[in-house]
Image (tube, rainbow, N blue to C red; front, side, top):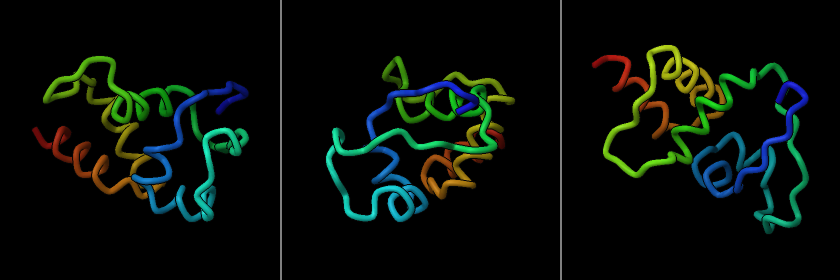
Length: 95
């Protein structure tokens, strides 16, 4: 993402997204067998905001993201078909 390498577990991407599971993990595979995935037209800021929802630093019932961060999350969750994350973002933006 913008010439920056993010090292994140594939679990949420392969299990939470129809887009990623079909395009990048069609055969499953282990963590070690997967190489980097280039995500064109995605900003580091949007990707970091999205990762906050998948891998929160604190375990709590709610995430403390700004409206702009939730918009980033909504944009990427819609693009990548993360339905549960998308619904969470919509819910947070409607509050």
